[in-house]
Length: 211
Picture 1 (tube, rainbow, N blue to C red):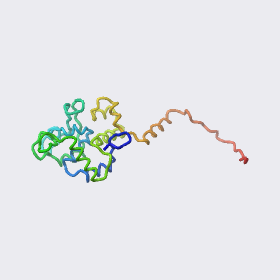
Picture 2 (picture 1 turned 180 degrees about the horizontal axis):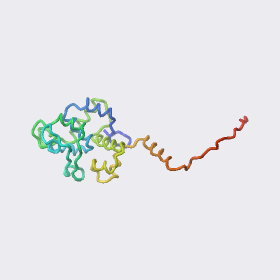
Picture 3 (picture 1 turned 30 degrees about the vertical axis):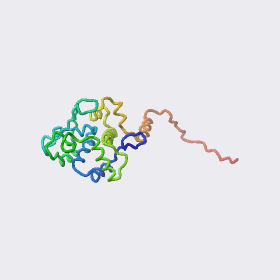
Picture 4 (picture 1 turned 30 degrees about the horizontal axis):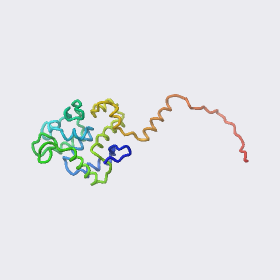
């Protein structure tokens, strides 16, 4: 479902996020799953493999941070803890595994955890339901990281959230809009007076000559 001109997952707008979570996703589990992806910028595999104890102390008691363990991260990167913001906490309060489960999002028949392909199918149906195209499970991560960048958060801090091994790989995630490029170049006009001409106070007026 990656259909933008660079083959990257779509960046979601605020209205699309609202529509997807209010009408597209049909139950509290799905809203919690993709809410974690959006509000922690984690990878879908990291989210699917979360333990219940990574998020909840017990039912209705949510830890202030979600722990993404080293063994579940891409490339087995270091364990990282991401703060739970209020928007995510509200989604998590509405969800808790129905049966006692080691995993936060149990798989079919309660064995193991939900597979990322199953999560992708859930998202695909939700997007079809509300008419949003070009979205993949990676869209939430790209959307979150791009939003941080647009808000002026330094890349080194964003890297701590994303878990990228290096800044070069992180930068490939971030969407840059044409107006941002124009704004960046326009800012260069502040550097000096190079290229600026001071016009004389009084300019001569020449008569029009028709040929």
